[in-house]
Image 1 (cartoon, rainbow, N blue to C red):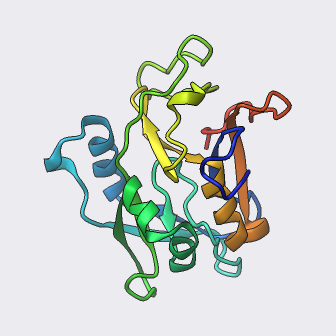
Image 2 (image 1 turned 180 degrees about the vertical axis):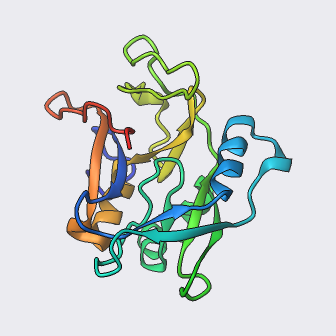
Length: 199
């Protein structure tokens, strides 16, 4: 990974909280509206905010990258600062997440708007009929929007893919509390996760 968005080889990841004893945030019923908007793109379905609650043992530490759901990245102010407000704005809109006991603005969901047709369908797994889930995604290097921190694809619109430079910046803040699953890379020496979007 690299902090330079123009650097090659390109790589795409799915970041999530490290799989260990750690508390994570789960969205409430607002997740349903998010999925509907991701699938339909209708302005009337567009969310304006979310509710979430912590899961896990109350004695566990809270995750620095708090959401494990692949289509609903929740960011803290340090993560927003690390990624840069301008670059995040190019990828979508930060919307408030209400969490009991948390200060307003402590958590925001990045509503990723760009849907980019960059999947190499010939070399990728066939999307699941109902969910669109793509087990192994291969991207066309020249079509990957490397300047964006994150993007979606039309075949699997409820999932968010992250460029390597952005995941590196997340890791600089979260450290060992972040798992970065490699989805795809131009570098043949790097082996992708067998099913990176699986929960």
